[in-house]
Image 1 (cartoon, helix red, strand yellow):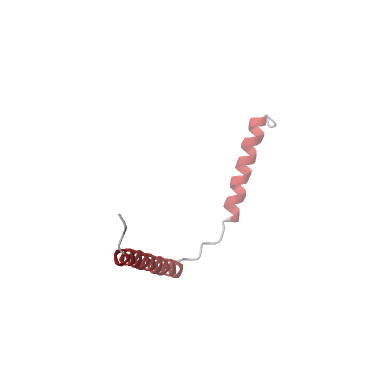
Image 2: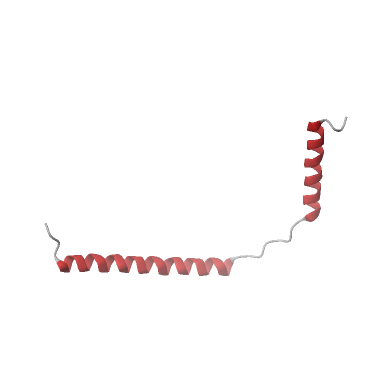
Length: 67
């Protein structure tokens, strides 16, 4: 059963309109998200150093290097 050209044109027009609306919504969302992005706090180097020292101490205990 062949599809009429008018119906085919209406379907393809509706699909292209839907895709254009989705792209516009996505672009608006991304621009709003970029505007609301807060800068991250500076890294806590003292906290990182303490954590790596604790991990190294556990590794030495597991290897039984410290008794």
